[in-house]
Image (tube, rainbow, N blue to C red; front, side, top):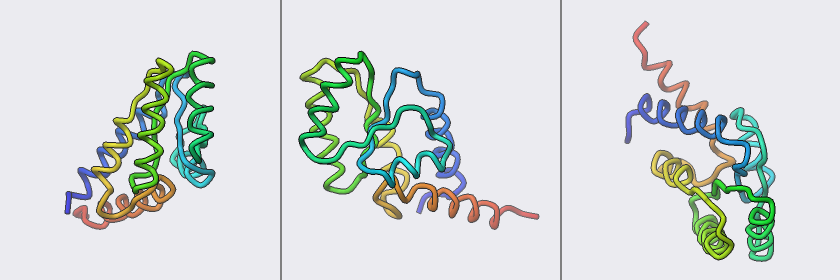
Length: 137
């Protein structure tokens, strides 16, 4: 297992980057629980829910029309991977700038323990606890 302290530091970096992202960047998640999880982590701004193939294409067209960019933050299970692929294809077709590096980084950090965005707050809390309990007093 990765060192909990290193994992916590990297996750904190990712969350800070998402909090400080440009206003034109919209975070795309699968559902309401994912959006709520990001809000719990202090990540606000525009967060759109994308579920099902129809909403994927309407989302890519809407972002293109509004001149916005996307941060793909779907789960790292099979369904999330499929939605991420559809989004990337739609963004390429509509010439929308997009970033899926956060999804990849989070998956690499947490893949062995969790598989979705909605589990991030509890996982983050668990990491904080592990790091605090292992610190010398």
